[in-house]
Length: 373
Picture 1 (tube, rainbow, N blue to C red):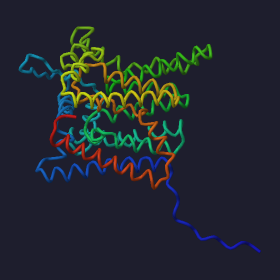
Picture 2 (picture 1 turned 180 degrees about the vertical axis):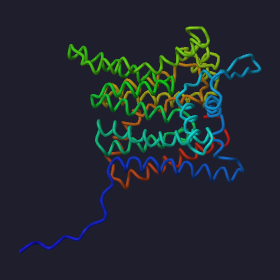
Picture 3 (picture 1 turned 30 degrees about the horizontal axis):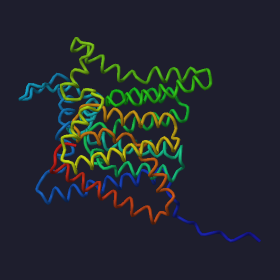
Picture 4 (picture 1 turned 120 degrees about the vertical axis):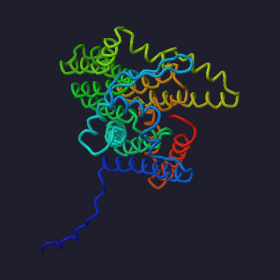
């Protein structure tokens, strides 16, 4: 006798990828909602803070007029738009040409779309190493990073992280040519791409030493990887008729490499309670890096993470920007993601909710009051 038909269930569990994207989107929605409420309460324009201030203005100016704009400060320093890499303004210009939006709004479209791509790429990297649950939590934790409000701005960090995450995932899957192409795009987005280039190069070198051979596709990927970064450095050099022109431009912005001297001086100049707190924060950062090493993360991800951290610390840049510069180093969040993955969902959700609200509150405070990110 045939078994009776089972009732058809319309409820199916979401795929881990959709869960990761959904969790990430929720963190950004919370951030935007808190910003909107705070902006309304203070009579300020929250949307303008996302697309029309600080570095966003420089990218829009390049999108609309090309390179060539400079500002001379009262102390004589010259800030040139050549400090800003070309891919984001190129996308802003292209989107504003085909969509009924201005370049500034196009920058938000690029950043928000890149956030979705980055969340999936981060999930893929985390799931490859530590399982689907940890991958989902890694994507969500990236969305509640303290300076995650920058992910909702017309800045380059989100676009760069998307290229970096997918490039690293391509390496983990052995797709070296794709990894090199994505690294090229990252190299046209932010100078931090040197960390990604190093990750691919060192991974290939270790493979060569271990296997005493290197597949042709690996060689091709490594050779392709730095082309975007080198292309823009060369463009600035040719335009300014100096091989070191790009680095001179960055130095004029106060972004020269000093090995951490500026950071040490900044700490020394703080009142002792603030200096002690900052040292504790740097100690926490070092502890996270040590956990990444002890966790035996995949070599390309580990080299990339450490590289981004080092690049963010050894420059003479404005201190307040350093947490933002480190945001693409999503590997730092893998140890806490694995720890959260061991908890039951009902225990992990309140933790993530609390972090999302704290990140959103800090973002609203920074955007509406304290100054540039």
